[in-house]
Amino acid sequence: MNPVILFSPAKILLQHSEQEWLNVLGNNSLIYSDLSAKAALDQQFPTLSESFRLYPNFNESALVELDALAAARALGTHTVVALAEVDLLRVARIKDRLNGSRTRYEAMTLLYRDKFLMKQRLAEHGIRINPMAMVGSACEINDFIEQYGYPVVVKPRDGRGSGGVRVLRDVDGLRDYLQQQDGTTLHNLMVEKYLDAPLLNVNGLYINGNPVIISPVRSTITCLDFLDGQSLGFQMLAESNPLHAQCVKLTRSIIEQALPNLGTLLFHLEVFLDGDDLIVCEIACRLGGCCINQELTEAYGLNPRLTLIDAERGGKSASLKSLLPPRHLLGQLNVPPRTGKLIDFPASIDLPFIRYYTVTAKKGTDYSGMQMTNGEIVSAIVEGNSEKEVSDHLAQFDSWVRDTFVWA
Image (cartoon, rainbow, N blue to C red):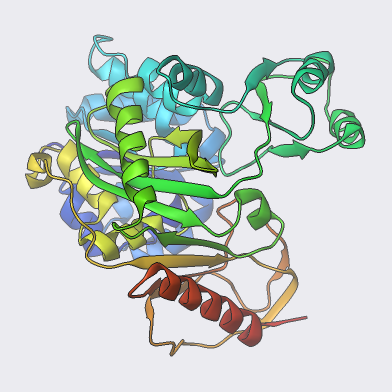
């Protein structure tokens, strides 16, 4: 099978063992990531050390895609894979050039990255979205508010991790937001009507255009609440829950009909539950953050990330065609840092319903709260026999963390 050119944040790489990466990547593959994580990567992956291509300021480096393109050509491989949102477009550009510009990966992937173009396409296919507009000035934001009223959400069209997202609830909020801008022309922004409604997420995997995993979950809070310091929980919807079938149907209509056919992809869909209606917030061709990959692995018996790479290389996973049923009903909780110094926390956890538990926090570290929605310091996956039991277990774990982690 072909070598792989893999783009991945260190955080994702470190969630898997070295043997898992060796098994799925095979020989001569290269891994592009951030130089700041070199010590952790070298420690966990000594055998893979020669495979790493690490860059300062990796996420923003314009050199990376040129170097990766040259490496792919030298290796004679067309298998280039991105596991995080920030890498999707540059990987798509590389794939187009490896195919002699006979493909349109960049143009197709853009509809998963540009939230305005994405939702415009969904609306054209009869899928419900909130009112929205592109904005490039204070007047244009005000025009939208005059038409739809407060509150509204202003955000980057290609944002990630909820970075740059602001809810404007009144004229004072608008003025405060505008005073923080560095010019009179606003770039790459959109505004949409804010909807105060429960949030549902759907994560999963398609192989060669066939759905293999479609997993709807209920979010306990919004991403913005997570940034404000609340613990972010997700709990799977039972197949007997009518919302489960609604989410699966909506997901398939978006990926298989409204948006371009990317064939093999991971996806993360966010929808609001407005009464009995599902209104799309956004969709991305990568998994959600936190420990979604581990949750899906535990629930479905298939590691989505590793399966994606194997399928892209033409391995056995490429033959997967059937939608898998969940083996377990699970939930996950992600706890953000407080503002202060973390003094101590237990070495282990003995709650019987925990299936997976990880702590990325470091004792003696000063924290200043969350900056993006991938800054959690504790995560766990819990199981239960019903949605209510999963919900109760999430609450118990949250209380345990807050009672046992010592802050100054």
